[in-house]
Length: 447
Ligand code: ADP
Image (cartoon, rainbow, N blue to C red):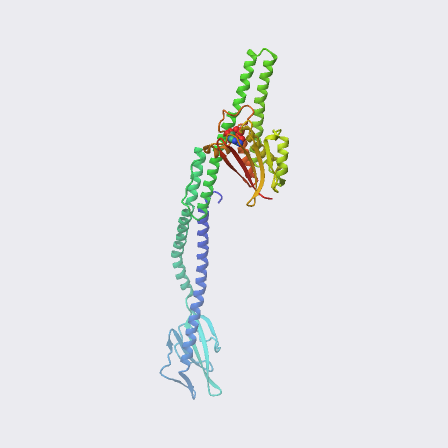
């Protein structure tokens, strides 16, 4: 049974059920038809006998019939006996014993010479001490014959019926299950060809299979996207790590050959240190982003005051205080992870200085607008050309990678900013004019 396909199991079950139902139906039919025929014969006997009884009487000891009296009618034989139970008139069926005791009003079954009879006696009184027995006999219905006929019909009809049910059931089940075959064929083609761009592509419908196929297609879509993202990420990450590694390698080779004075060595060591720092920052950032993405590092959502947080970030950031203006007048408490929000703000302020003019200024402000809390970092620096504004949120994207010196990042900062904003149920917006400056704004739901 375990080896059978679902299609076969359903068909088998339907067939067995049909066979069982047909059997039960047949049994019912036999029982009911038997009882109906018997009842019909009893009614016939009773009615015929009672209507005959009206047409006969015993007048002064002798029988008196009128012309409507029938000794044999509708298969019912009528016999007339005197009160001593001696036959007065009528033809007793061959082999029927006349010894059967009389009993008025009740129908009994008697058998005689291999034939079953239904028998009814009526007592018709005459005067005060005389009377007449009227006995009616009818051959009992041959139930066996009825049953046999039914069984013969059933023997032909029922298997046909069951076969029809099985075939119909199988066809319907097979049709309904066809989409499942398409789904599993597509899924295995995807897995065998390792081709994530393939889709099942069932025509849209409301049944379970269409929904299943749609869910699978969405799953493949997501798999494909995350697979592409992973491939891109791995390529970018290894590329980013390769640069500092080859700089370190080059520096070591150069130092071995040409560095003679302690000053030369110191310079090389500084360079190696800066590159190592860059690598370690990059790895730390990548790790943190991956953890956030995978949910291993979960943000602690606690009431956090963005004003306090901003002051702290500015204080700890070692920035040139004379070049920062902070407008922190509004009440700006949000639900969020203070450490992550600090990281977001630090990235934005770092960028504002990094891409600002040498003597430029940075403005940080927290305010409320339309039920949101906004935290903006604005600079009067180089700005970002329109065509780059969408892309700067992608990992490793840099507008002008030649600009980024040793100390700068690898194009991960804004991608992390965006990730942190989304983790807090918020989003980032950017307004920027090349040559005039940029303003990055974090939008958060208020606590
Ligand atoms: P990184 O600073 O490490 O290059 P980010 O993800 O922080 O990476 O920024 C991506 C790019 O966006 C930067 O390379 C830079 O070109 C641009 N950018 C970010 N902030 C600013 C800013 N305040 N002004 C101008 N350009 C910016």
